[in-house]
Image: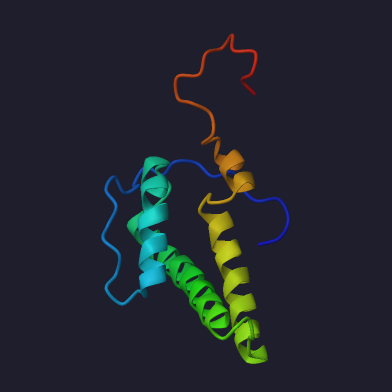
Length: 126
């Protein structure tokens, strides 16, 4: 999505408990699921309708990590076709990360960096 993105706000139907990672995810994708899901639940951003997008994000990250492992095991050599796949997966992961508040800029849009009990006279508060 290009241009100014709409502000993210907590969803009224947000999940309150992280679902288990789907069984078909690779080990790298499951690790990413377990890493990000607590953050998404705490920010009240994810609903059941969003889970397919989160799965796609985790799959994309898993693909990048798997190809990087294979590249390292091959002594640093990477097949041109695999490099293209890795590039597209990384781009997809970045786009999903932005959608779900997993980048510094997207977190700032939802205001998740501010503590809930922020003091009004705090000179460092923004």
